[in-house]
Figure 1 (cartoon, rainbow, N blue to C red):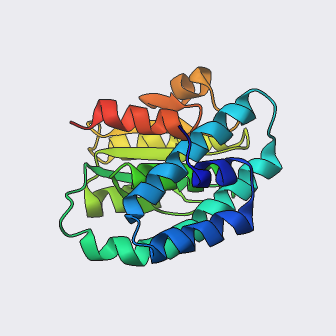
Figure 2 (tube, rainbow, N blue to C red; figure 1 turned 120 degrees about the vertical axis):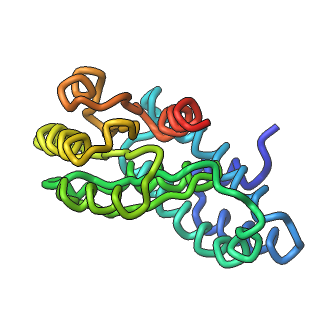
Length: 208
């Protein structure tokens, strides 16, 4: 049964969602329970987007609501984070030549609330930067995001650079509005996520 918070986020009621989050935190609600509600709400938003009920503006707004709720919760989560062991390390970034970050930000949020240690490199990230970060943190998974078709070449270049640097064992996923299985094959990635929920499920499959 969806909670009130799930409903207001899924219905894009931004100010109500923030007010309710503040009230729940003040009342002693576990921050993780609030993140679970955010995750449930994003699943609803995702399915409404797939069925054509929601469009890009709603996705952008949902991303903004998540960012604002995260900002309220993160300081409280940080206190307990030392006790919870992260499930695995994931590097995420929008590839060189592309500056779209809505989808990436939602994926980062969903991976984070599912217990992964996420390193977000931002947008327009060159292949070398991905390789440097891989060397620095030795992740289990690298997630490449892109929306424009020109991003496909950057994805291919980045996958090749990571493998050439000797990290062929690291799983790589690609995703973004125009990405499909053809792009996965073209880029040489191990999987593709049609949305943030698929990205989480790939991470679960790959990281044991």
